[in-house]
Image (tube, rainbow, N blue to C red; front, side, top):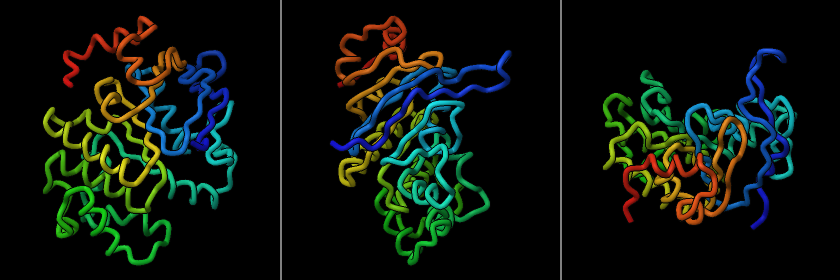
Length: 253
């Protein structure tokens, strides 16, 4: 598979030189087109900072993120607009990521309007159906839906501009166990049928197991372990990865 992302010596420091905090400290990795990568770690490990840099929502202190040959940290806004059509996020909590004052159809169509895509209404109906919602759902407001349905709306919004990459940041942590399984299966099906590149950020190795083929474990802004998901689950080498695995009460087959 061709390389899509290349991350080189990536650092992100918050605060001044003396009292600052390194959220990321010299991270290097690659992601191939069509790959499904999990980024695992506890709160404060640097996961969210890394995701924001991969989505070009923040700039590194040093190092770089190269996407399909383009250094996103110094790309012009016109190039970043095209980049954001190709790389779409799905956030953790749809209650806060969906504007309660907008109808669902307008929410899902928002990225299309920003990209000046024609035939927005037809595309909105298509992606709502793709995530298991009736097209009529577009006429309603987010508060009229359950948590699982709101996450389906968030996924529909991400799919609307036909991206190449989905970045899912803790996509099921706000949902109950039954609904979590449904959303994980939906994401797996969509990634397979659309041949998407998927980046999943989670503290839960069971979610990564179900969605990803390769994983990296972050701790204090550094990668402490990486490899195939099956290998990591069967025999994690680092004590930190073993503690994350032990925190899962059960990994059902």
